[in-house]
Length: 402
Image (cartoon, rainbow, N blue to C red; front, top):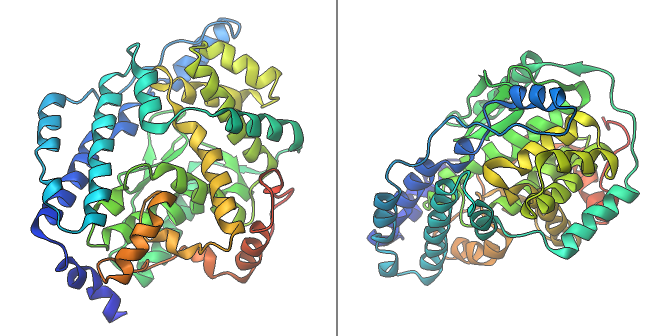
C-alpha cells in the first residue's frame, strides 16, 4: 500500500514541465466548461405538465439553470496558448493534444445551446448514430422481452443512505476517497454524477432491486475511475481524456449486470435512446419522439418521456447513443479476453488503452489503486465470465441475482 500511495508523486517526476502545465490547465478548463450541468433541464415537471395538457401533442421547451460560458473566446485563447507541442513524451503529447481539441468542441457545444448549429456541434463532439448502431437498437427492441417491473420501489432517502454506505466502504480502505451524496432539489433529474459527487433528485424513485446496481453504475464506475484518475500523474484522467464517455457508460451499464440486476427494461431503454437520438438529429419534435418510443418501441410512458427530453437537450444531444455503443464495444473487448480491471485506472477511451499501458510500462502511470467493491465478489466474477460469452441482446437478467 505504501508503494502505491507514493506512486503518483514518484512518477510525476517523469513528466516534463510542459506536460505538467498542460495537464493541470486542461483539467481545470474541463471543470470550468461543465457542459453537462449547462445542458440539464431545470423544468422537467413543467414540461411534463404542459405535455399532458396538450394531449401529448406539444412538448414545452426546456429551460436551463447555469448560463453559457461568459468568456468563451478568452477561454479558447487560453486553451490554444498551452504549450502542448513542447511536451517531450510523444504519447503524452498526443493524448493531451486530443483533449485540448475536445475541450474546444465542448465550449462550442455550450455556446450553441438552443441555436440551429447545436446538433452539428453535438455530432462533432459525440459522433452520430451509425446505421449499424441504429439497426442494433431496433433489433434489441424486437428481441428483448417486455417483463413486468419490480413492484417494490424506494425513494431518494433510501437511495442516499445506500450510497453513503457505499462511499463509507471506499473511505474505510482509502480515506481520501471523495464523493458527496447530494439530494438535488430540481425535479425530474433522476441520478447523476457531477464533479465527482452523486446527485439524487428528491422526487426520484426506483425499484428496490435496482438501488445497488445503479449505485455501482454511478459510484462504483464514475466515482471510482475519477478517484483512480486523480491518483495518476496525468490529472486529466480524473475528468476524462478525449472521447472517454463511450467506455465509461459501457462500464457503468456492465456494472449493473455484474452487481446482479440489469433488467430487460434497462436494455430496451438504452436501445430506445439510440432511436430517440437518431430522431433528434433529424430534428423531430419531442412529441413525435415520445410517440415513436411508446407506440413503436413499446417503452412505458415515463421512460419514453424522459428519453425524449434527454434527446432534445440543447436542441438535440447525441450523447445518449453512447450507452449502447459503449456496451457493445465493451462486450467485444471482453469476448477477446480483455482485462476488465485495467479499465478503471481513470476515464479514457478504449482506443487510448494501448498508449496508457505503454505509459504504465515506462513507469509514468500506474495500475488502478482501487477497483469497484462488487468485483471482489465471487458471484460477480461468475457473471463476468458469463458476460464474456454473451451477445448484447442476451445481456440482461430476468430477476435479481443474489
